Length: 253
Ligand code: 13P
Image 1: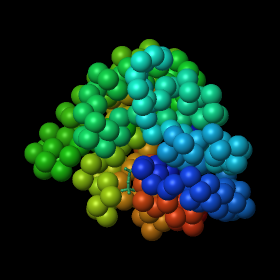
Image 2: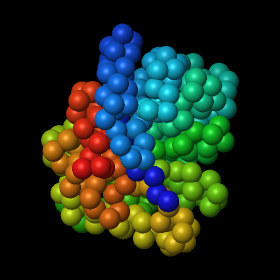
Image 3: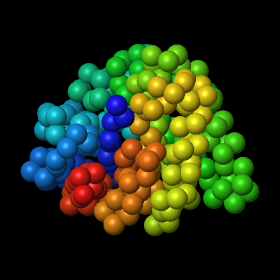
């Protein structure tokens, strides 16, 4: 059974006190109002994770936004998958377009990060997405296929079955431009067809594919109603407790 997941990505926002306060608000609203089996996750800055994991319980799970590809060692300033797991995190975002763009993270590097995250029992939220130019050029299916093939298709079936895919068109991130429900569904169906081709029908059917990019309480219902959209990866709206909780609740609307 595919899991329905709404994951917030706080990016580089909130200091420690603000993060604790926002997260506590989110947990309270989601605990009171959530019905159904959808999973809520907040991917917070590293320094928040240890505290948040003690506050969220089963109501709101915790994720990191990145991890290093090596097990440990002389990588000043980096955080390993093992460290993330050790503070109670269950998820880690890998391959967000901001990491690809500003930190030059390649598909090959992201494949390594995905492997080490899985080795430490973290669930990778593996992001793919095309830029505006790539969409306008009409070659975006090829771009997305390449990101899947070089990023996660090297995994064996048992490992891939633990991965969550997030489709985030770069042109829709933080811009207020959302992919229409039809545009998003078209890509999600394409991704699922690639999963069928690589891993077979059963694994493809069971893989959650989230949509991200200017998702908010107003457009979430239509997006999540699409056959191949299994939830969302939420940026700006996850920094407002009411909005994030409303998006979580959308699955029951
Ligand atoms: P916005 O929801 O702010 O567009 O960000 C999406 C995103 O990048 C989530 O990872």
